Image 1: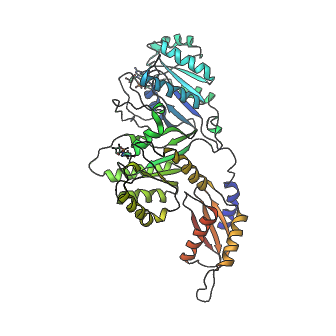
Image 2: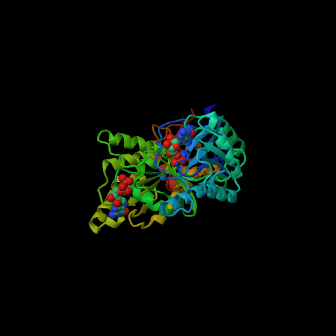
Image 3: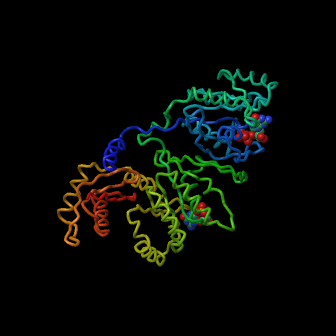
Length: 455
Ligand code: GDP
Ligand code: GDP
């Protein structure tokens, strides 16, 4: 019965050619200090994100999973937008424009007490060019008396402004209802990519292997805004980074960028962070530093990645520090200590100089392609038939277990089920697993082979 359910479920699992449907994207735009962060917290229904009182505090573009009246959407928060922006402000403005480009709808936030400024008008001009639905929000309308202020914003040309108080929650329900009316069911932005939205990457590794250096190098100065004095302990989750002409979603980057100094239990928290990043990701990049001996912590993190069932890429960082002696030792380490992940693509990089950083995308693609792969049942059984004919299972106590039939029960990562007449030796199972890899590739993905014994 279980087998029947498994077989029935199989065909539905695999319409991999269908475009992926991703949640619609809502971008929040507005100049600094109008209350965007406060509104984000209000929408997410939480309070922990820190709100800055200093105008002009910049930050990375961050995305959050949000929901309202039973619908899910992705909320993109941006730094403020300054008119005639230069330097870091110009980059923030660029972030806002990118956010608008990738959004299905925009929440434009204006401070009702201040009214529309020249900066607001420049945002409006930019948004008009985008031809996306815009919900105009008049924020800081804390009471009825202030509602009159909001009405002056009609002049911006986006229709009736929604008077809200992000601080107290006043009017936000009506505003979100209006958002729901304009958001499509699925994102048009995510639909642009055939694989369905940006692929999700977890960049993990022990402290000091170079995670934040690599992240900065990959993101590039124009794409990510880092304000050294901000020091905000906001809670950004993911970062969108353009690599090889596509957008990738690096998950849980806050934990990477933020320097966490903890005396006690640092290992424990680091491991929790790693696990939570892995849970959200499709592919893990495990970063190792070649200037130091592979440590217990490296091995533990690698094991977490393997156990998570995600696609996997090994990146050997700080290659610029490698000398000949260390290089020989490293080769031994790879052979001995990393033999169990010989299926993962390896890239040698230097986060510091940017050397080989373009090798990362092909490795990610290879790993994800393997992770997604599905072997048609016919091909799998042809392979099993030939394999078993050439290398039958050894006879055990007068009996010889036979493989009746095999199927790939799922992908991401690939899992196979073999229906047999008796228990297969662990050695024979390993042999089949190895042959599966040799025949079908699967570079960069763990694979699993299970058995179902038919009496
Ligand atoms: P952002 O720079 O646009 O993200 O703005 P913040 O969310 O950091 O808010 C800037 C300041 O405005 C903070 O001091 C907030 O407490 C305050 N603020 C935000 N929303 C409201 C509101 O609805 N009413 C009032 N009175 N103050 C608000
Ligand atoms: P994280 O703790 O994993 O985020 O590591 P960081 O990115 O903060 O890097 C730790 C230290 O290693 C910093 O001093 C970096 O400058 C240095 N570092 C990172 N990558 C490289 C590299 O490729 N080569 C060299 N020589 N140093 C690096």
